[in-house]
Amino acid sequence: MFTGLVEAAVPVLSFSPRGAGARLSVALPADRPDFRPALGDSVAVSGCCLTVVDGHGAAGLHFDLSAETLDRTWFRQLEPGDTVNLERALRLGDRLDGHMVSGHVDAVGTLVDLADAGDGGWRLTCQVPPGFERWLVDKGSVTLDGISLTVIRPAGLRFDVAVIPHTFAVTSLGRAAPGRPLNLEADLVAKWIDRLMPR
Image (tube, one colour):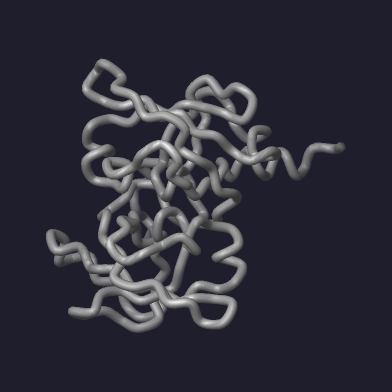
């Protein structure tokens, strides 16, 4: 489990297809000497829970991506130099400052617009694929590329989020532009209620 509070935004070092899957390598955050996940640890990479498969060191962190992961995320488009968000898994007793995030990407959305909110922050408009909109509730939670954010005024397949300057500065959103794909994870509670409701 994760919180959606990004610990670091780092560049992709390499992305190499391997059959139907791929190997992803990312840099370690230079300013976070404490961020050193071990072999087998879970790390949310732009919202997708991945397993460290080759330790760490000067070569960074390495992850194997399954065909399922590539089908559910925008990672097929990854290139060296792209920025991804990292968050280590929660430990028992950690504070939950964002919201409960599983790291299981539900769909890929698109950043439609990015505008100055007039309060020092930014207003982002996102579009989701059909079906995802049933989980969007005004003032509910959503995860964009691993970032815990609050839904504002959902309308059809679109919704807004407000991003404060700190979040904009320390995550991949600071490098985003309209047209960028985004890994989406809906609120866990919304998904369970939806699944349990009679149809």
